[in-house]
Image 1 (tube, helix red, strand yellow):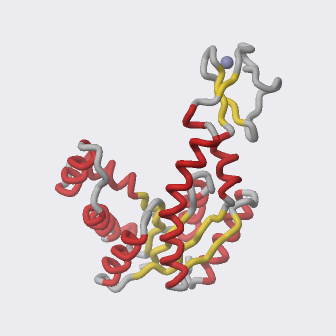
Image 2 (spheres, rainbow, N blue to C red):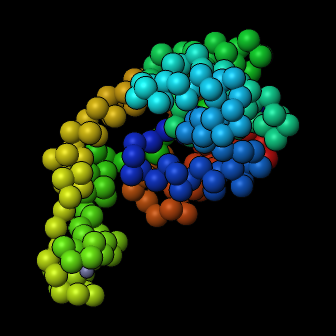
Length: 220
Ligand SMILES: [Zn+2]
């Protein structure tokens, strides 16, 4: 079984790359958020446990997440392998994943990092503005208004919600990047980390991801 771990900060474009790589390798993307939702919906024993933590506003413990993940890996469509998106998020989770896979004679084959400098991530994530009149959305880079600071549709003033302001994004990102750095270090130490430049166009990034995955010996 080929387990590919896809790593990247929020805004790095990891979510765009995951399905492209899945198409290429013909293996599914497994995102832990989806696993939680499915288990809760189907009211499986693990789902019921996970829901208890989520309802209490707590993080789902790693053992439950890993158990859900192993369940998913045992399904027929995952027989050749999976692409993990959004897991592991910490070094402890990465170590737990290694142990759980080792018990099944499997291992992580490669960890692909879609790398984008922090300030670019802040720029991508913080460029969102909305209008006061109706909340029409704009983005400084991808969909700017015709007249700066004014809504194209109703002419009202554009503003940034606190959540979309650069200082808020920077603070949130510092936390997330701290955990991501640990995971990156874990795979670097295992010589499984391969970084691709996430600043390039989507197709170029996809080609770079394909190259490192092929080099890791993951055949299609
Ligand atoms: Zn408007």
